[in-house]
Amino acid sequence: MEAIRVRTRDWFADQVPVSLATLALGAAALGTVLLGTLALLLARGLIPHERILRTLTSEAQSGVLYASLAGGLLALVAGAVGYRRMPTRPAREAAVSGAALGAQAVVVAAFLLWFRSGETVDVFIRQFFRFEVLGEFARQFVTGAKNTVILAMAGEAIGIGIGLAVALLALSRRMAVRAPARTYINFFRGTPLLWQLSFFYFGIVLGLGLDVTAYQAAIVILGINAGAYTAEVFRAGILSIERGQMKAARSLGMSYFQAMRYAILPQAFRRVIPPLTNEFITLIKDTSLVVLLGLTFGEREILSVARDAYQETFNATPWLAGAAAYLVVTLPMIRIVTMLERRLRSGLAVIVG
Image (tube, rainbow, N blue to C red):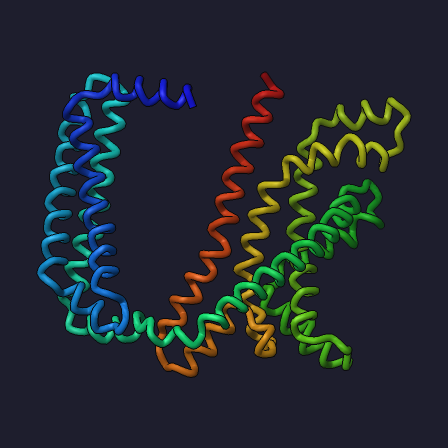
C-alpha cells in the first residue's frame, strides 16, 4: 500500500496543469455519456419499454450527449495538440489517455445521437428492450446458468484427465504409442464440436440404443473434445521445462514416470494453469452448442432458455438476457485468469531473481 502511495505521489509530481486537465476532461466526457445515460434510464425506469424510448429522446438526454460530445472533442484536441509539449513522460501519457477517453466519448455520444434520431428507434427498443417479458423466465435463466456451469466443469474435469494421459502418450518416442494419441488430438481439434455432438449422440447413442440421456452425452462429448485441447496444453507445458530437469531426475535413479510425476509435472502444472483456465472459459461458451440435442426442461443451459423464451414471446430481449447470463458466468473467470497470470509472472520473476 505504501508503494502505491509513493507511485501515485510521484505520478502527480510529474504532471503539469494541462496534462491533468486533459485527462480529467476526457474522463468526465466519457463518464457523462455512460453514467449520465445510465442514471437517466434507471431514474425514469426500464419497465415498460416505452420509458426507455422517452428517456433516450428526452431533452435531458440531449443535454448529456451534447455536453459529452463537446467535452470529448476538447479533450481530443487538447491531447493531440499538447502531447509533444509535455515536459515529462507521465505528463505525455496523461495527455494521450485524456485524448483517448475523449475520442471514446465522442464516438459513443455520436452513436447515441444517430441512434435516437432514426425512424425505427421505437421498433428496435420494443424488440430488444422489453424487459417486462423476462419476469416469468428469470428463474429459468438462473437454472440455465447453473446447468451451463455444470456442463463446463464436468466436461473440463474429464478433459483434463484425458488430456494429461494423452499428452504423456503423445510425448513417447515410440511411434506405436504416439500415433494413436496424435490421431485423437488431430481428429477432435480438426472437426467442429457441433459435428461431434451430432454424430456421437444421434449416430452412436441413439443409433445403438444406449441408455444415456442427452445431458449425460453432452458432458462426455464436451469432455472428449476438451481433452484434445488440454492434451496440447499439457504437452506444451511439459516441453517448456528445461531438458536438464529430466536428466537430473533420472540421474538420481528415478524411472521415467517417477521423474514425470515428481520433477516435471509439478512445474508444468504451474505453467499450464492460465491456458487451462482460458480453455475452461471457451468450454463455457461451447456449451451453447448442446442446444442441438434437445435437453429436457430442467437440463436446459443458457442458450436453450433464451431460445425457448424467444419462441414464446416472439421478442429478442431474451437473447440479450442470455448474453448477460454468459457474461455473469465468464467475466469472473476472465478476472481469475488475469490474476493467475499476474501471480505466476511475479512468482517466476522472484525465482529468476
